[in-house]
Length: 333
Length: 279
Ligand SMILES: Nc1ncnc2c1ncn2[C@@H]1O[C@H](COP(=O)(O)OP(=O)(O)O)[C@@H](O)[C@H]1O
Ligand SMILES: [Mg+2]
Image (cartoon, rainbow over all chains, first blue to last red; front, side):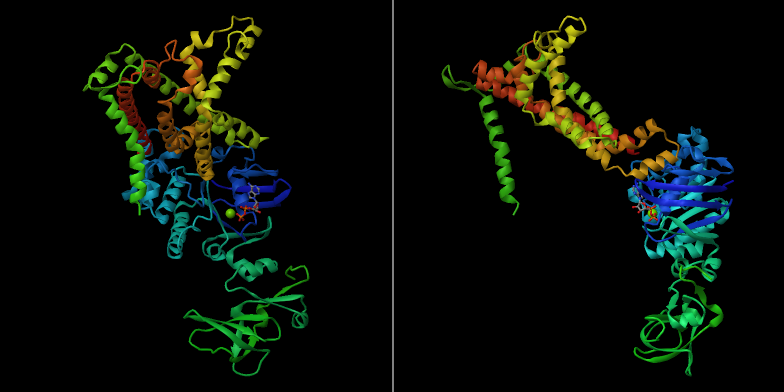
């Protein structure tokens, strides 16, 4: 079981309220991702759940039991830190065995569990090595192994992939997702990278300045962002925002439209602009358009087969049924 | 490019060593005839067979051993304490470091006259306040007193090195251990102490080098009486009080040998304990 409920949780550091009153339910077995820009309070929220920080007010319940006052070890949660926080003087085996040793498990039982975890994580050949002798990806796996053996009711990850290079990151992303499928345990995963959030999450919690902007599945957030912040944060390249008379004509203060919802037409249509830059990804080409008269630059997705030149004039047609309309407060209307 | 520096350094170290070796094979009595020629190993034999030799080695080792133990144990405790966030941290830290800046001679005199004096010392007043007979520290508890004074001097050094080491410990490791169910004692034993092991080694090695040659603290307090005659002090007496340079030089060579034995011995056990912890 790993059902976590936050009620009116706040956290102050001195005078600074880092987490504003906040409610959140994390369902058992769900892969939840906290995503938001750096400094928005994701780590703080995770550490509150872990018990590494004390709540300023509010309460945290784990599996229906009040846990706000419990020591971290009592909450039955395991955490994987950004720095991995491996114990440098212990070898891989001892690192993974550490939590079991702390609860006083007997040696044979520990050995069985450690070897099983090492098997699952492909660490069998490295059990005698010290963390310093491992690659980034291997260290990451040791940290995960140390979390797995405890059989926690939920795993907490704080930007676990941010110290890895791009290629490894994609690999580890898959491994963590597969781990989640196999264990079916609640996982809370913190990242500032919306691509990680979109690809891994069952549910995404978008945070900004200590408040939750929106909670939903990746596609819900992509298709129906509740406000300008979520609209701009989710999706790459970013959604285009248009204000002014054209937006007013659509009956909104500002209008958002994703790059794939603007098509390039042969004849004169709604908008016209000049290609400033073409980013070719092979399958798609993203055009940065200037002088469209509606926004400073528009990003438009075009077919990767076609070629575009700098300075070329193009006609653009927004897909009217895919517009996102926002009022003056930036809320979806 | 390195050569001049190396040569200078070698000369710097070798000059006194060769002089000591040279004189140790001579009968040299400055006030009673000066250089009286080569005597082979006579000085060495005389120095070891003197009844003061083994007691002085023993005294040296006792002082070094106790001071090391006291400064390391209390140094770790103080460092842990100073690492805690607290009010007036800066001032407290400076106060803790202060004894290190007091010259050994001065600190020896201060301890002797202000604290340990059996009539006017602060400790004597304290004892009388509790209705007890004041102790004659430097005669009744001579070794304990010397160990106390020297420990007081070296504790700041140990504390400072250990505090820096504690502050370099990654907080996430402690948090990970906390989540793994390690209580305060276990976090200390499994995470903090192993992290400090290298700093402790450094403290032990550096202090040993200096402690083997402590002199001023003994000179101004007991003057080597009451069983506080260390090897260094014995050499001093041979050279200056007995005016026997040759004999003193032989003692100096023994002191070098002792220092090396102690250093190798310490490296061995400390190195082993490091290996054992890391495996
Ligand atoms: N221990 C602390 N003391 C004071 N301020 C803190 C502390 N930890 C975090 N903060 C502040 O709280 C805010 C949120 O931090 P954090 O939760 O680490 O952000 P994120 O993980 O989303 O990047 C930041 O402005 C940070 O400076
Ligand atoms: Mg963070």
